[in-house]
Amino acid sequence: MKSLDISASNQFEGTVAEIKEGSFHGRVLVNVGEGKMVCATVTMDAIQRLNLKEGATVHAIVNPNDVMIFAQCP
Image 1 (cartoon, one colour):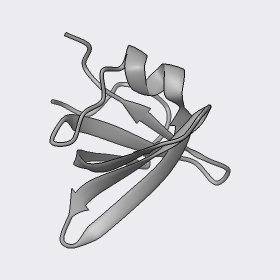
Image 2 (cartoon, helix red, strand yellow; image 1 turned 180 degrees about the horizontal axis):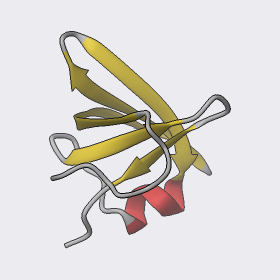
Image 3 (cartoon, helix red, strand yellow; image 1 turned 30 degrees about the horizontal axis):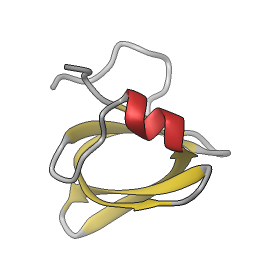
């Protein structure tokens, strides 16, 4: 997956290492390499809509206030 063409410069490609599901939100842990992990809290709807699974390749987009996850949908 190539880098996204958006204004955010803090983009990290990685692999979903773990998903902890809650009733409304879930936590997605992304391995971005070199032993570094990024954790994003996202809605369960987003986890399902993006079809996030452990091992999936995603981009973590970081700004000073939050982290977003981008995935190619099948």
